[in-house]
Image (tube, rainbow, N blue to C red; front, side, top):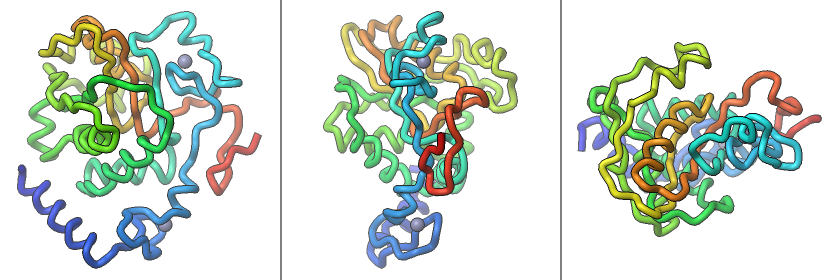
Length: 247
Ligand SMILES: [Zn+2]
Ligand SMILES: [Zn+2]
């Protein structure tokens, strides 16, 4: 355990004893990192494609997934990647608020999730892992696996290349940027794999990982993600102040 992760665990351990304030509004939130009203107001996704989680009327498989089916078979995304979800994801990732991983996993486990045989977190390259001290996807996956009683394959996928951050790249270049970035050291013949990641932007990274997992024999790959970026033009309505959709 790195010093950073140890320090964060101690701080959060103490907060569990004395109770804590909601990370978003500052109200007393007892043992939870977020109060229930802030949780209820997080920006939900509208009816969306079961495969890629982008908005799609009546939750039908979208045209893009029909035209070019991705390697993954399904995606469950908790929220839209916008304020304040982006702040929460950043707080876990860059401020080591590890209690958020438990909160996210709790929210995921309360959704109807497809059954899987193994949970695999999106891997970080070891250079980035040593900079950050922990992998946020591992933290979420560990909590989810425990809640769902699913085996955790924390080394089910390995990142071979230290790729340029996807955020700085045009959408079209993202698939090229991640090609060949992963390796799967496991024999996954016939296994249904659940991949955990914090943010799904274009889906290029998750698609590349799914390709590698399928090549290792996985029969299905399901993505479990915290936040989904919804590009302009794919949104059927704007998100109201309370997170509800106003059509
Ligand atoms: Zn709150
Ligand atoms: Zn789709």
